Image (cartoon, rainbow, N blue to C red; front, side, top):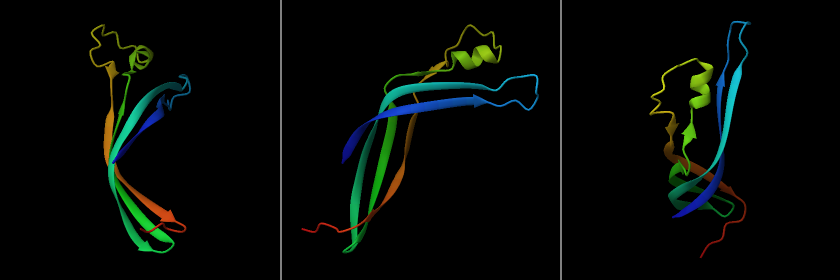
Length: 102
């Protein structure tokens, strides 16, 4: 079991095919965390694997107000302009080198 503190960068990008419009990017930074639980699978003296199931979340909300303004969405009721994304997944680690055995 474990966890981490992460510094994340989230990039939203609009690319226009029409040359009259400029491309647009929004870059946001924020702190977040990973929580994970894993197992270690010993294989050889110089090789082993680890599997980790994780959940990642951000501490602050991300904001899409600049994107809505760029798209000229005049809706003042922007209840979904701020959101806190969370992801989950499985990490497979390859441990190469001398393995400590007990």
